[in-house]
Image 1 (cartoon, rainbow, N blue to C red):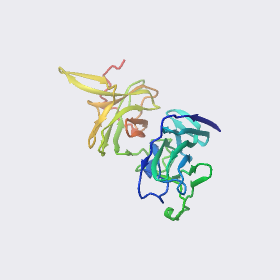
Image 2: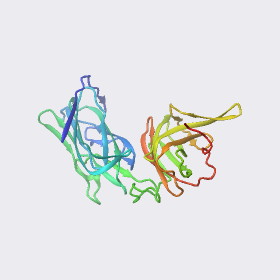
Image 3: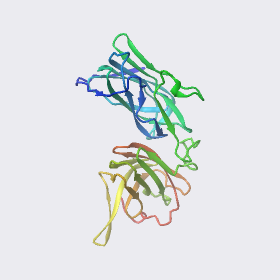
Image 4: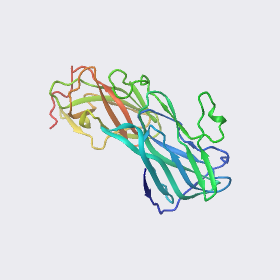
Length: 326
């Protein structure tokens, strides 16, 4: 296994908390949809029998891949890498190894204080709801230690465990179980959720033989209290995917690329469709055929990444067949 170390020299900050002396180490969010990128935020509420925590180690389970820890001022960051048991797709690149354990070292979190430790990763390769355990160890100086590594057996109540491992439950989108995530043709989910965002109504139109440009649509609803922004869309089916807008200027329909993405206001809904905001698939490798499906990865400024599938409809009424995109 390889080890990467990053020294951080700034002074560490901790946050006081009350009533947490006997609390377990847990994640702020206990569940997330499969095939999404999440910020796993570990809450460390106390030390070891009154001693300050000086090191936090988190083991990453299979299926939590492409992990990137968040550095903490005053702590040294160590990333232990190794081989995954399976191979995962990272935007068309096959990846079979990566971070397996994250260690924040050399800090000082007093017993009476509380802090969080964050690692970002993707929940990949699941075909059913799964509880992922992240065995965690707190070290307090040379002789203090608390280990959170117990996993509830089937039918056992996790609350009965003395030192339960922090967990994230991987949930499935409606109609997504047993789809395998490899062939999206028959079991593509109609709706996916990413935090406060809900993506639905996706579709692309079939393309004529030899065509290199295709159009797509979907709807994003923001049920949260904070604005977000769709920054980028990627797809292995195209050389690139662009966000476009069509507007009328002096009775002339004009289309422009949106370099800064598309705003998704809090409590609002944004619809990408022909004649307005929409997707443009450029340098399409194989023309989209009716009945197929096109996988995409959407990247939002705050919510992060989510994989989605756009079913291919008919070619009739393709709004982009008469436009030039050179």
